[in-house]
Image 1 (tube, rainbow, N blue to C red):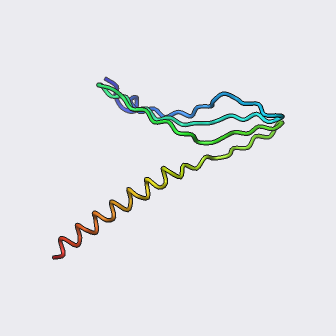
Image 2: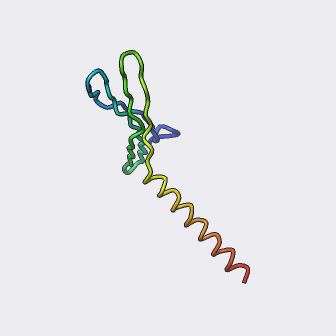
Image 3: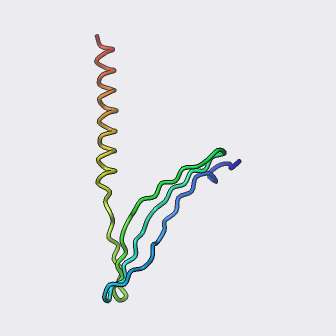
Length: 91
């Protein structure tokens, strides 16, 4: 059995380089792995695109709009449950 932080691992990965004209484009992703005694869970997500042109490299972040919407819905549901609980207790 793993102990401490050994069961949680977060890494940043670089994908295969793609050459387009004089630019080299490299996708960048992030992974989170949780390994337990009876199995594990992994979550991967794109983070950015690295664009290298000559000696200059630009990092273009990827904004996950779906994840932001899910977090907003989760927050709204927690708020609704809290307000319902407060309304019920005040009666």
